[in-house]
Amino acid sequence: MKDGRLLNIELEYDDDSNCGSSSRISTFYDKLNQLVTEFTISPNPTQFHFTLRGSSSSFIHQIVLIDLNGKEIIKYLVDEKFTERNFNLPNLSDGVYNAKIILKNNKSVNKKVVILN
Image (cartoon, rainbow, N blue to C red; front, side, top):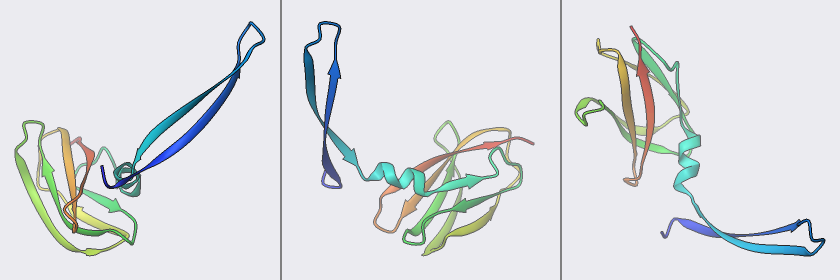
């Protein structure tokens, strides 16, 4: 994947035979995983609204709330950079929903939203 970088990690360990051993591990680090931690949704569980907090460097195009059957429930068109923004929720059934955060560069991040009325 062109968005990643390669990290080399060297581990050294001793076993019971008193023979020192080492192992070299190469790990692919996907920068998209960083995006997951850049966004938080609170309160979660929620009832009538949620607040999305993110990095000021992330330009968000839209947020799509999707139920577990894959049905789009609501779309929020955002088209701006922000660090915190509130979103009102329609009267939804209790359950787990997926908030798909779509960035301007068409990458997306999924966050779980739990609705409890």
